[in-house]
Length: 126
Image (cartoon, rainbow, N blue to C red; front, top):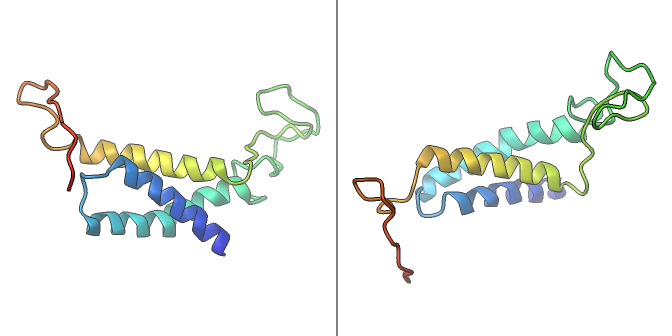
């Protein structure tokens, strides 16, 4: 369980980089709870479980036992994903969550002027 916890936490830290400086800590914690409790377990089941719809190890009803020659096709005719060491699930979940999080919260305040032109943001120290 600790192994999966570490992967789920890593997916959440990918999101933190995308929304840095645009969300408050309480909102980020709520997102982390939702991501690690509901989203990540579902996506990891899709890919890693033998019965998952995206798993290469799940036989589909249409499997004929003949290689179909399709992309990702294998000898049993199924189409699926083989994840190497968990990097696909972690980065898929974290990256898509980061994309939608950044899309929802929008650009940083002060990044654009009233005309939509970019404003230089000089480096600063807190």
